[in-house]
Figure (cartoon, rainbow, N blue to C red):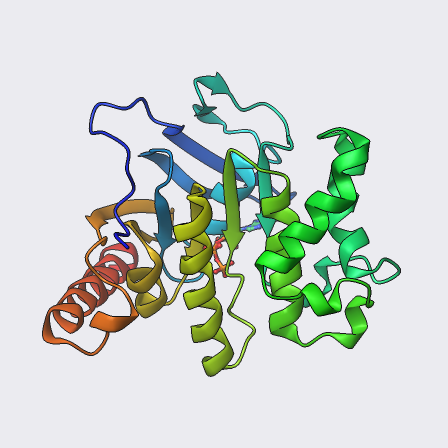
Amino acid sequence: MSREPSHSVVAKPLLEVDRVTLQYVTPERIVTATRRVSFDLQAQDRFVLLGPSGCGKSTLLKSIGGFIAPTEGEIRLAGERVREPGADRMFVFQEFDQLLPWLSVVDNVVFPMRATKRFPRAEWRDRARAAVEKVGLGRFADVFPHTLSGGMKQRVAIARALAMEPKVLLMDEPFAALDALTRRRMQRELLELWDDIRFSLVFVTHSIQEAIVLASRIVVMTPHPGRIVAEFDATRFGHDQAGGSEFEAFSERINRLLFAGEEIAHG
Ligand SMILES: Nc1ncnc2c1ncn2[C@@H]1O[C@H](COP(=O)(O)OP(=O)(O)OP(=O)(O)O)[C@@H](O)[C@H]1O
């Protein structure tokens, strides 16, 4: 199956990040996490923000989530300015403890539906069970999170987010704490889910390989302050191309960009 998002070139962007500056004001100083960052995301994009620690990836994601207001510029979702958190933007984080330990897997997935009154109440459990099935955890629907491996917990977090049918799924290094084999498997599964559901994704990582494998588009960022140095189409690459000469050349090109950015930032 093609991993090309099926949007047309002229489609209006789903998400617009428009000259966004994000700052933290601490008693000692003002930290500029991003400076005038702009990009557009089309529906069904698998959009990856790639860059080293401190380039403002997580801060940007939180701002798309409505948790941090830009000091300059604005973020629009489906044409509406983002001003606060909402159920149309669901998060998956790196941490394994993002599930509520006193709720079963299926009740964890129901939780945001209950909290936001999304969908008729009578549908909650069926929707939750269907989402849990989709991530391959049907047999574990009624267990508590502490009995699950890290990878399984991340699957539940993904099921919980996708069950809400968000306009955009926001993932902040969701596989970074997993062992290499599990991480690879989770990447494959995420792509299979995307083949199936065609959700719109913003995915944060500092792994070049992960970015290339997962993305339809990659934005490369460098720190101090966080800014975009390049944007690439990566639709033609997946796991099957990894190790091939074109994949490696692309990876090396991004690597050089990241290092060049460091030199500029520190030089
Ligand atoms: N709560 C905070 N208060 C002050 N400064 C912060 C805060 N959170 C982040 N920063 C600073 O903002 C900048 C961007 O941080 P951010 O976490 O967004 O980067 P990142 O690219 O996601 O890095 P990482 O991969 O390490 O999470 C960094 O310089 C960081 O030190």
